[in-house]
Image (cartoon, rainbow, N blue to C red; front, side, top):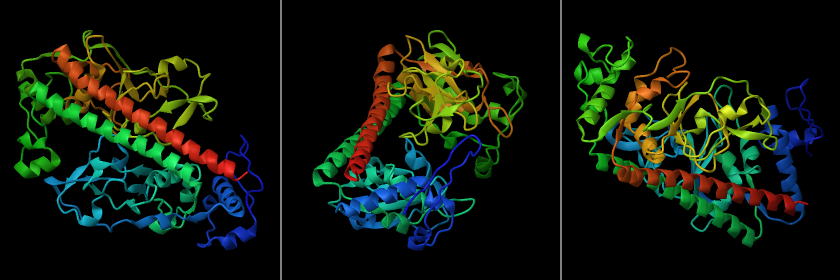
Length: 480
């Protein structure tokens, strides 16, 4: 059984594999799609067969679980006093944000130490919930895996995330335009059981990473609360805005302007440039006791810039450097990292450094990211504006401000473009954002929490990657 050949060349930019026809007969679902017999999944199946021959237990993943399921679809009723409801993308984010839904049933609420697996769209992305997930609603596009009480949840999570579990998940994908998997596909995945000492080692490492992630999220929440408290700012949302047409006007965000309101900051006639919430945010900031400075002020930033477009040449992880893309910015951990050839011309223009701030400036606008030690030396795409804080401004403080509605609402007024939204090729527009500048001690008190949060988040990623690598190496060694 297994792969006879694999070929990937410039002449044949695809993978192909020759398999024995008996493998088709053995497949319980009688699959005929090529992706079900990828070289990666066949290699895993061969390894598992070898482990069985060596008398190493291989059981069904579902044997360690109380329940694996997802709830049915339902019509949502959105309300400001509802339960925070997370989409399949939201569960992967560092900051847990989503929409509030009033009619969330019990089947949609999740608890800590559950394993969540995205089941449609981007299939097979795995996250282990912590206490910050308790009683939050989660979309039906996410499969819930509830481990048994005494199960090594860290080991189970590591296996699903590894180069063993991922190909086995992917080989069960079905669907044309929208890819999907079902709970039974997870339940039936073969799970090899290493010696108890190895399982405990991997489980312990994963739970350590899990704890660090939880602490990182709590630090960020603490910094956010402190930002509002120390600066005396109210929570900013659309409820404070008198839209034209009352409640119906709020739905479409209709508003009126006088001629005196036009061209106050920009010579533009698109509605985005005059969003009421942005004007309201600026008014609140102006009424406070602290000084407002523009983002481009030398006392706030050394430099604000966006590098030019460039041709990307992707290589394997061993021959290149990681490329941070806009989709990675909000993530708790980074999925689908690509690697750039390290001999690309002018590559140094795209290298990022610790405590720089990145803001997505094309496509999904306004995602904010603080570069940690872990990501220092990575490359980042030209679709992110770089902000280099001055020595007088705490990078963490500037990050939490730009992430807040007081910063983001100002970013929204800079948007232009039809199909693809932009906020400036060179980063010049961002320099006009007004930044409150409290005392250095206040900035440091808030900002140091943010910097610690980002460092802990990435330290968790390092420990998790080490644990997964340990699992992969021990299974490979056991199969020799």
